[in-house]
Amino acid sequence: MTEVVSENSEVTVLLVDDNPQNLKVLYETLKDKGYRLLIANEGEKALDLAHRHHPEVILLDIMMPEMDGYEVCERLKADPETADIAVVFLSALDDLQAKVKGFSLGGADYISKPFQSLEVIARVKTHARVIRLERELQARNRELQGDQTRILDSISEGIYGLDENGLIEFANPAAAAIAGRPVEELIGKCFFDLHFATAEECRDSLPVMATCNKGVPEHQRDIQMLRADGSSFPAEYRATPKLDGDELHGAVVVFHDITAELESEKALEEARELVQEQRDQLAHTSRLTTMGEMAAGFAHEVNQPLTAISNYARVSKRMMAKDEPDLELLGETLDKIDAQSHRASEIIRRIRRFMKKPATGKEELSVPELLEDTRQFAEVDMRNNEGGIEVRIDDDLPGVLADPIQVQQVALNLIRNALEATRSAGSSQPVEVSARRCGEQCVRVEVRDHGVGVPEEAEDKLFHPFYTTKEDGMGIGLATCRSLMQAQGGDIGYQRPEGDGACFWFVLPIAGAEGAPCTPDEA
Image 1 (spheres, rainbow, N blue to C red):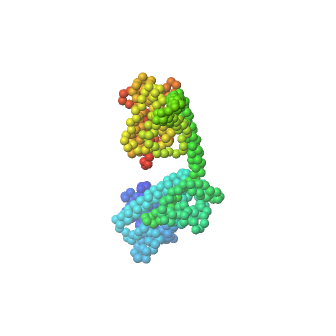
Image 2: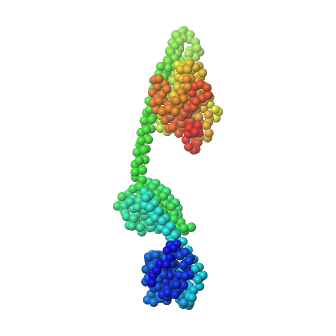
Image 3: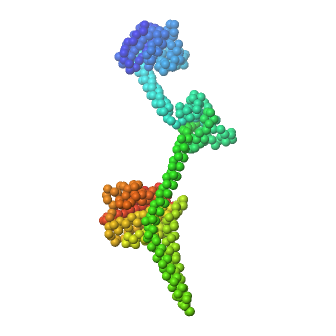
């Protein structure tokens, strides 16, 4: 006799007894408790029902013909599909040996006949709850394991799980693809023998060895690793110790082939060098253009001391032609010739220094000296524009780390623009150049004029290449200035001042200051 007597699917209980009266009593005891009840009167049918319905609890009679309860329990526990079922033995045998044998075969509990209803209800409820919770936990674990497997399989980086001896316990598909072997062939292999070829005495210094042996996390880049075919590849890896409390159980290694990354980095570095070379060339061209614009003024500046030298030389020659020359006056005249020659030489020196390409590297600069040198250099434009230049510098201004030629080029560009704007506005007010410390990292230089100013719609485009507000401008001056300032670790910008005119600023990093380069926000 086999019968399903309830369709409640919450918890399934299988009742097994060869005595119909006992089955009836068990059924009457549990029928109103919300269980799905199955009944069987012999062992084979009980096994069949257990395989088909996977009950949580089996109330199993021991003394049955053909196949007793012990054999039924043994066969249930030997099958993985039914091994988790809670088997509760029912028997009139109340001796200790019978109970010990039942528990040794995997039984969960023991109820003696004649049984009490409340006892049966309580035991079934307890075991049903435990089995249901265990099955839910197992289902959740399987779900998590499935999620974990899918995640690991989808990761493009290779992942190994190693024991404390470096033997591979786990490998994901990406590791197999990088190593050039199927996953099943990697399991059990020694990670160090597989990926590194080295002498035995050098094994302690191999990557990941310290993580496996001492629990020390590691991260290295551009390490040469081997594939199964003996070829090598550059790799980046991270090794994390596997710990159970304070006990070390090996390491987890995440690695990937960085051949493409290194090639990209090399190409990027070559591109940077090319850009830097072109930027330097553009800056040099900009300086040549500036000198072309200032050539007439410099010719006039150099001509003045040369004319003075010629005049003083003629005077000296006439004095020496006298019978009794005034040697003291002659000496003063020669001193004036020397002074004028130094003046001409200084003008030529500034031009040559400004025209040459900057040497590689940066140096510590004195901002006051650099701005004063630039002011003198801009005297030609100052006279041509009938304007003036006032320089105001805070006391104890620290030195900055930058290229002097490129910084002077930026300062001169801003000052010349300011002088031109002042002339265009018909103003006689001087261009104001100031320098002050800005925070702990930077020195800020401002160039303020009282000229025509900058239209509001042009403010966001001032530093764009080939954008200009001048009728005959090329639009590369301010764009070059920004490129030069950023190369120094600083920046450049514009702010609308109160009143008329315009105000441009640039910032440079203080020499020896630690931290990030100067930024517009900091400025």
